[in-house]
Image (cartoon, rainbow, N blue to C red; front, side, top):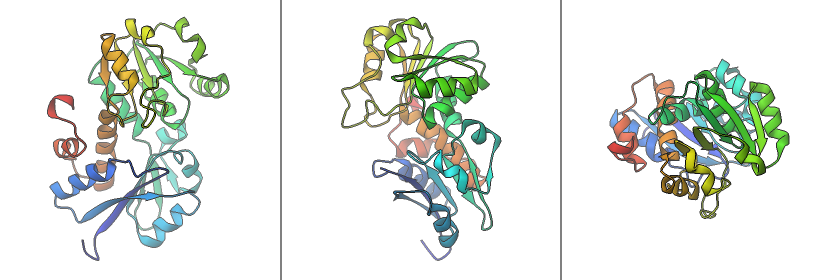
Length: 270
């Protein structure tokens, strides 16, 4: 590090569990870039952009619960992020702040390693910022989408925005789908023995993805594997969205293998 080192980081609460610093710092090292990436646990986004400008932070990853709140503080937001209503990546060029969303890119790339999506029935469990990114990406791939949530209010709102179907979790068996993605935090450590989706419902589903990556194999993914489904770990989405972030920040091709190894993915899993 030097006085010229470019500073990047991740904001959220909590972020101490994040693997993003390992992934991005490995990429910076591999390409001999004078950059460092650190975690910032913050309570509010209201002061973040002031800090970015005062400290000259070159870029930030944005995670829960700030992906939606951050929009009002940015100078520029790309079309996809505006449609999704959530930003997970910020860049500062010394004058203006810009925001994009790479969650949808990461999720779709990870899913497409297992299956095509056009015309497929896809269930998104949850209705938060990550769910919005999934629905946007799936619609772009011309999938048939249904949003499922324990309570209908937010699911109905999100479904209305994207013109897709929706339902309550208690009515999940009414829907027949090819792909299921959990975007909620249910199943994250320390509650690793929990899943919103009944195990027997997975019997006729081809691909199941969980955006959670701690634990790597959530109860949902364990149940899905036992049911014969192809499973997509949250680490795969993390890698793909991180690659998109890195390339937007630096303008350089990301060292995929190095980034994957830094977060514990092997070649076969990527």
